[in-house]
Length: 369
Ligand code: G6P
Image (tube, rainbow, N blue to C red; front, side, top):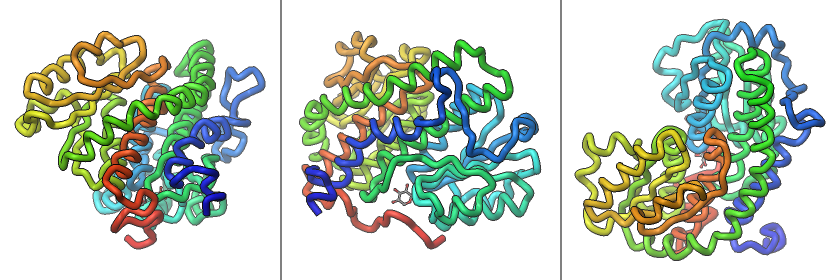
């Protein structure tokens, strides 16, 4: 067992540390030799098929759903196609408007989640083309989908998903860029710039992992609390939702992720002296707005950890603790910002003496609806 964990105490930690490799493997052969264009030879979908897409539905469960929240922004921004992201167990029952010009993207690490598989079948029944993003070659989802983009994260054992999620983000970046190339919605130079930044991500994750000790102390302090909040705007909000789920799954600490600007419409009432707030501020455009939300919670006594870009360290004055992530393009920041949140959950779970890899009540793959 120790050997399988390659010297790590838990599969989760091992899998967190495998992320740089997972990023490289998932990008792998999907860039041209110059690294300036995305190639997806595995797609059966033709360029004409892509041009015919009017809308996209992303459907998934749990952490894969959270990757889909990022995927929505990525595809809309790059390819300018309208995207909705749904939880699979809700999707089928809301009479979604699915047509032949709808592309349904199902996201599933295992490829066996019953709700996701049922949504895939329903989408096909309605005439939609289904593209699967999955980590398991030959899984049910992979077999039944019309197209598959495999995430090459390697086997994920810990119940709390880490490297599968970040590899799903990479898959969405590749798909969004590929669609933009076909549709001509981005300049060649912009695509090349994005791909250069993407290729820097594995090394940047390594730099984050080297600072993991910084998060240990904060994790130990939050382990004493029963409630906390994650806040962020835009893509930071999508990452906050995943950070909050991770913490709930393995530390059993209740937490809520809030779109930072929405706090003042109710949730701010819950902020009291000493409550931990994890604030994400990686999106330049939204930076000042998020900074003012941080001041709102600070003024009410919150103890704030800021997860911010390394060049926005001005924020140091307004937060109690800071974790700086290396500079990348705003669209790619989720692939970095989630890593400290994974580590925080891991260390909080350890501090509480929980079974990190096998949290109570949860299963790695849920094959019942
Ligand atoms: C279970 C796992 C989650 C996972 C979800 C979806 O609930 O505990 O970690 O995100 O299923 O799994 P999938 O294999 O479809 O990505």
